[in-house]
Image: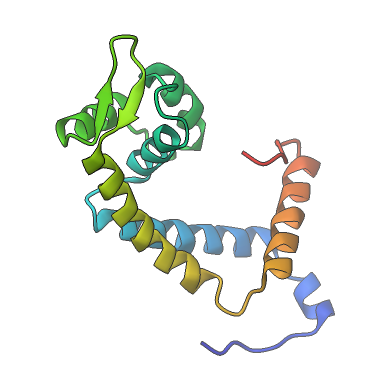
Length: 152
C-alpha cells in the first residue's frame, strides 16, 4: 500500500487521539478477526497464552484478575474458562492450576499462525527501530497523562 509522505512539521501537528484510536480499532479488529477463524475471542487467546507461558501455575481467579483490566467487552471469563475446558483445550488440577492439553496447544498454535499474518501485515514497511520508537512514544504519552507507561 502506498501512502503520501508528509513533512515532520505536518506530522507533528496531527491529533494523536485520532491516530491512536484509528490504529487501535483496526489492529484489534484484525486480530479479533484472525482469532475468530479458530472460534476464539481475545480473552480465549490471552488465557491460552498465559497458561502456555507458565503451565500449572495459573488458577482461574488469578488469571481473570490479571486479564480483566485489558478487556473492553465485559467478558464473562468463567464462561471462557468453561469453553476452553469443554473443548478439551485446558485441564484443571486438584489444586486449581491450569494446563493446556495437546489439543489446546494445537489450537493455540493455529490461532498464533492466524494472528502472525495480521502482525506481519501491520508491520509492513516498519522496521524494528521505528516500531520500538513508536511504542516508546506511546508509553511516555500514557505516563505523562497519569497512566502506567510500563510494559504489561
